[in-house]
Length: 252
Ligand SMILES: [Fe+2]
Image 1: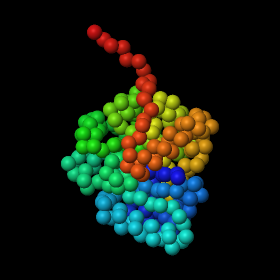
Image 2: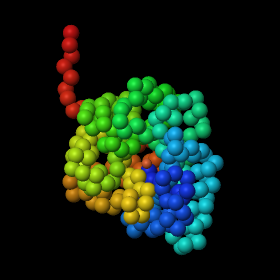
Image 3: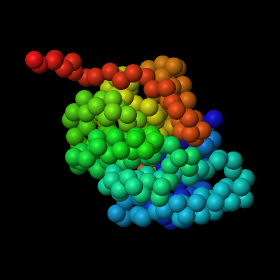
Image 4: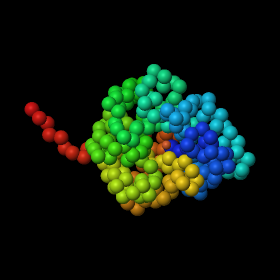
């Protein structure tokens, strides 16, 4: 069982595939990567306003096409919620959790800053019983400069997902080094594809997992794979203890 917890595979509702034909090419690409379960996570942001009903209809349609084409992958509901939209935590019942089981929320940060309400929002979501997952910290300019901030996010209860392309090195050496550093400090809980297109932005999960096995260990690999299964099952994962980047001296 190989689970991808973040991708844009539903046709016509965000910047993923434009048609069912394209979506099926992406499904074939996922299957070629050994992926057995996909949590579809269309954007909820200023440009793409998805909601539970739209996502459910699109998932049902894709499932029908998958079965008609003798493909086997399982598609589940999810959503990638922009931090700005998540601010309205009283409306979280309108959000779609990963696997639609009420626990894990995929929360996308802006790339160009870390919102001042980040920690407060995490706190409020955790208080409501959600488990927030922050995807691709490697794209955020503040986190890239201050890895200790990633530690602080994890320490406060956030879970972190890096992108398969960053692990492999397709996004450049800096992104690869950054994600490796985070993995070494137990600050990564998931690797996911964030796939959008079968050629331009495909599933690269197998390559990323091979890289983890080569660079780290079988144990590290099974940690990532198990964590993704916890998301599908809606069960709590056992996170490795985060390691800070600096030792802060107490001042008296
Ligand atoms: Fe995404």
